[in-house]
Amino acid sequence: MSYGKRATGGNRVTFDLLINALIAGILLGGFYAAVTIGVSISFGILDIVNIAHPAFIILGSYIAYIVNARLGIDPIVVSVVMMPVFYVLGAGIYQIYYESFERRGQESLRGLSFFFGLLFVTEVMLILVFGVDYRYVEAWYIGPSWRLGVMDFPLRMLVPCVAALVLCGGLELFLSYTFLGRAIAAVAQDQLALRLMAVDPIRIKRIAFGISIATTSVAGALLIIIQPVEPSVGREYIGRVFAICVLGGLGSLPGTVIGAMLLGILESFTSTFYGPSWAPAVAFGVLLLTLAFRPAGLLGR
Amino acid sequence: MQTRYFLLILIAAAAVVFFAARLVGNDYVFFAGYTVLQFVVLATAWNILGGYTGYVNFGSAAFFALGAYSTVALHKFINMINIINSHFHGAIADVLHLIYPLSLIVIGGAVSGIVGLGTGYLTLRLRGAFFAIATLALAVVLQTLIVNWDYVGGSRGAYIIRPAEIAPIGPYIQYLFLLMLGLVVISLTIARGIERSQLGYGFATIRDDELAAEASGVPTLKLKLVATTISGALMGMAGAPFPYYIGYLQPSSAFGLEYAVNSIAMPMIGGTTSWVGPLIGAILLGSLQQLATVTISSAVNLLIVGLLLVGFVIIAPNGIVGLVQSALHKNKAGKK
Image (tube, rainbow over all chains, first blue to last red; front, side, top):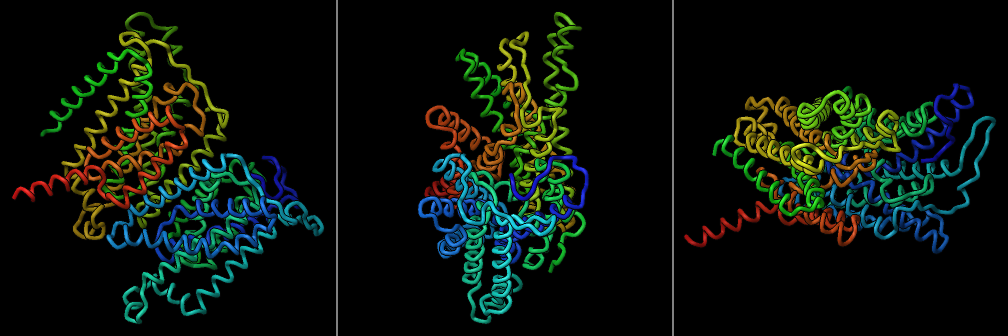
């Protein structure tokens, strides 16, 4: 992994190092928000434990990579164009999930195994097609960086962070101010009431799950901008996305963004002062501590 | 059938398997067989928690690797095989050589059991999904710890040299095979024993309706912790002899995704409600993978496992055992 400015383990704490670690953490956190926002919807609101989420993100990365390598189109543009395709994919998966598990009340054991299998099949298929080489994209903002005094803003991190915040903001507006968005929030609370209002809760859930998978298209493109991607990279994100989701409070989109920023900063400090190989352990520590002390999360319902 | 008769039958079956494998007279049988037996133990261990109580453990690889790395750490700390060779002679040395791996299995099992208990204690009080997520993350974190721990080889891995021969049996791989057979007998006996005991009924109430169980006075948290500990300990025991089998252990092989996937897929495909399911699933899938690895490639064989898992949970929710049971049921109904 190589994002942001890295220093070797055991550095002396200087102001430059501290401020740049903080900036790198915030930028990384913004990107983590985009990765997690889909899980916030599927796990936080719909109660579907979609552990295959990171696999779809990697799929998004590879689609951005293919189009970028063949046609030279900007990866973020590609990912936005591909969102409807991912939406349809997500809606289809929810339909299978509903018919096979949710309706029979078997979502806990078999539903989880289903998503685990999906995660696994996607990863192995990508390995079979593309091999385990690292892939990367080309864009104008990969490379240069803005400097403000001692502060360093690598554009490779800044652009994904801004794109992620736009995505999260848009989703929050959609959920709070549109009829469909409110129906999605309602389906989490009372399905029967929704039925009485002549709204089909299954249809609402299908739409919501579709949206959750649609966000992985963008998150995948952002991922491959930030770091080179190979099929098994997704596994590192499973712990992260659920840690952020739980830390922020299930189902709260602003909570997700705050949780993502916190984890980003924590990881950035860990890798600056202890070495990058320790960073993956941070997410799990955060997850366990949150579960033990504040299971409702920071902004929990 | 009483548990001790069941145990006797299993031991007899294990003896038959061992001598049949010796009759073939090719060490490859033992190498391939060891892997299949290891999967039988892992699948049975997973099923004690997953199948009986309904809590999904995605971190089988972590518990397995904990067992394996306990052995490596111990081996670095005190190289018993050298000590036995230099201080003891003749029959005493032979006996010590036989006992030593058993102590490794006990220690590996204890370490994994304690970690299982700890993970369960932190997460099982909450909604079930958190346990599953925590186990997934546990694998990543333990791998990070091992990669950063130079004492056990770090990311470079560690060499463990196994003795070539062991006194009354012959090649060491045959002894490892025998050990794994013993673990299979133990884990199947435990699984079947649990099924028919009060513990098993307690587990089943958790699986069917945890809230109702809690309300009727079933100590659900305690039972769940018992299940995570037994399940984790058995996985660690399966991992403990692994460094001697593989000879060179590195984090990516000990934490391999194939352990996590197989230990879920095998019970799911075999059937999760009884001890027979994981056994059938592990023997079928394990042998299939041994064949596919030799004939096609290891990536393709993992794809087959993944597709089978997804297919079975959708189409045959109760696995092969469920399919056979419903077929028998239909026959009976037809005769009436």
